[in-house]
Image (cartoon, rainbow, N blue to C red; front, top):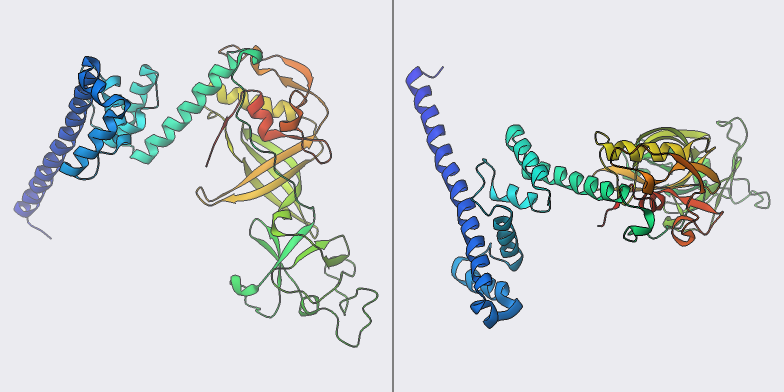
Length: 400
């Protein structure tokens, strides 16, 4: 066990190094604030700007990069200038890094920006955590503006391209070597959502050479599902097959035609998240929490988030079933969904009539009929829920 003197000296060392690097952090913030101030002052005087025109920051970036190295891109200089403009009186007094302050730049509301700054200091938030909070605030502010504006006075919504639905009950055959499944001789039928059906060796191989192929039987019957299942046989990894109750057969589809399901709503978590039960075929069901792809609704702890949830609940009330096209987002390690519902008369809160407190009244209208090319899918006259939320102002499109 270390003696008391050694412990005390170690603590002094930690304190000394901490103060040293806190000073460096503070100096960097001060240097960038002064740099932004000097750029703005030069621009206001006009002489240098007149000489370089709109290329002032580009020229400054080139020269500073030659003298000082990286960190002086034109984009960074723009952020340094914006940092000063948001803090004209003096440099911020909080203990945040310059990277944190750059994350706060998109928040135009000074009161909200100071709240986020204080939260970041109080909770010791990392830059990426603060970035997430800023993104949530941008979504909330945009939706709040939408809900306070009549539909005819809003900016046109940035809509998603309507995706093409795949085929129900279509699955891909997988090689068991791609998983830890011990039987490497059988093939796997991919249900989606990391769920597989292990085929028997007979199902995988198909009919033997002495068997008539006219009936489509693959050989010995399989009673796992209560009745015989038949296959055209000769399956291999990568094949796309269809299951139609009692028969498995190859079909001429591609991987783009997969992962479309019939779904049944369990609950609405918030404006862009649903709990559903999916019919994954082969008498299988899968309970999944699905995030609507390509959009963001405000967080549920905001008034705008509560309004978005209420809207989705109203739209999906009494809907017998949904059609879901799922995909995996590797960035967030989650499944995302394009959700479609039958076009019909429904009662929904009209976003344009909502005041700041979002006391929305339900009004009858045809869901998605105001802009058929965006909300109504080409097939089966379905309404695209993701775009409906964008059209009505409850969500913001997420790109990338």
